[in-house]
Length: 415
Image (cartoon, rainbow, N blue to C red; front, side):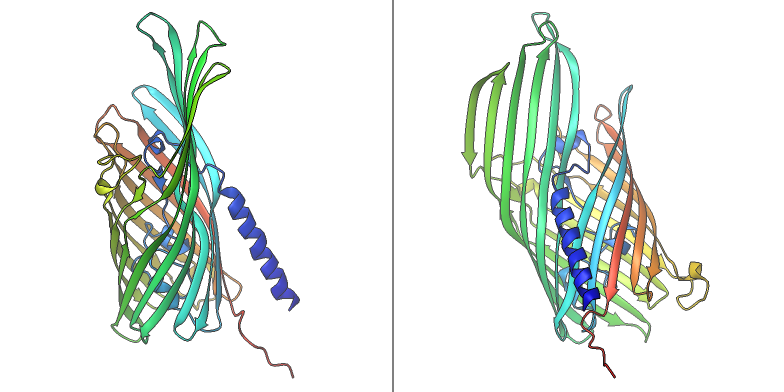
């Protein structure tokens, strides 16, 4: 009993740490100045190092919020807990100008457990989007005055989810749904400082608070090939929704506040989205998976305006290989993973956008009774803009996660 109490206290501490970390920036990119910023990847553990897949992934050892239908694939005695953090090194290049930056943050915390036979529940806190940027340049006004124009932004949206999955056809067909409370604040400012007079500056700032309840739905169908091999087909659907919102704007000239205003219910929407995924699993040997997702951002209103974004599509593929799960040498029981992904970003800058190309490598290191894992992944992302005058970006991201899989509901017999 004492051991279980300590575990519960640890989960509570990690949950509070994750809530506190939502105020931290885990990204630094000028492109996050637009829209809701960088949309977060909700792939956990193994899926993240397999290119960020998850729609067709069905594993009893991993929490997978990318498709809520996956939750039902667990036995009645198991409790799953997943906690992840990442570190990112970024490089920016615009013409001859170069810059580097480093960021780190807690990514997510989640748990999953059975409720009834063939029914399971999952809940967690994870990011919906990230905003983080700081850049500027020296300019000259028409009257010959030199000044520095700078832009800064921070914040983003967080997602608190609770999901339920039901296996409606034993070991063959599962459905599920997540109820997501998305909330957060995006703070942005533009500042002009005149070089001839250090006391003269103009600051325009805005703070946008967004919140609402969003839903997403999933389905997974399992087609056995043999006693150890199976195909899984996954589908996801996310309906369009509008955020409840409030915006505070202020203009300051020197130390004097020139104007301030509060606006509510200015149209801010989330897109309709759907996804398809397929995976092939050879039990305790090999997993190969492919995902495709699409979000209709072109029909989303933002700041009360339409046609601000491009449609976003993403394709990812990856695999996991276990040399020999029952081998005595530990190195043969490690799960080796790799993947690739491509994304057409929703962000549009003066009618132009950019593409993302990513590659991942990782491994799952078994601990305890080989049901729990320490997962490590390395990801490289290349941002390729549509035109040469836009900023080129490179990211090197490392993620470390802990997946605990234990028999919390097992009743031990006392002799």
